[in-house]
Image 1: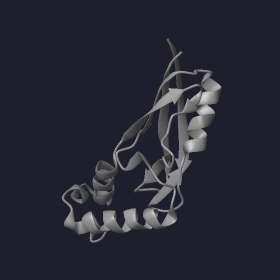
Image 2: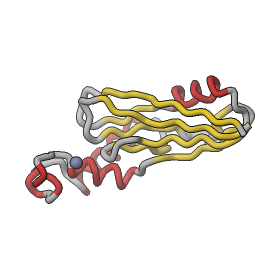
Image 3: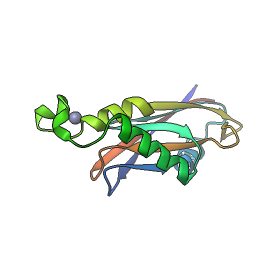
Image 4: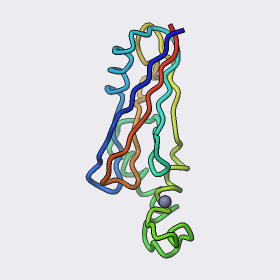
Length: 139
Ligand code: ZN
């Protein structure tokens, strides 16, 4: 069995954003030279997510509104976690809702995604360097 590991680094200039990382994951596959197997992509931070959905700006706006309704950033004093001096309790909750990782089948050297599926990095507490792990196993 072959294996490949790579970290993708991000420094999102805003507090929250959704970034399509499908091409970067595909580049990892090419670099790995693995043709059949599984691709794991996970956020390495507890205030960021990796998930699969449509690359459609209206939907991303809807995600933002939905997440802010469930776990608004303000008032930061409403969260026990922020008693530690942090202000990112909402980001932890948003990450929990949107998920830590995704696993995609690797078939004939390509991501075996459905017709509209794209891989996204979800940032909920940005303005600093953070990373995503790509692990590929197969043959
Ligand atoms: Zn925190």
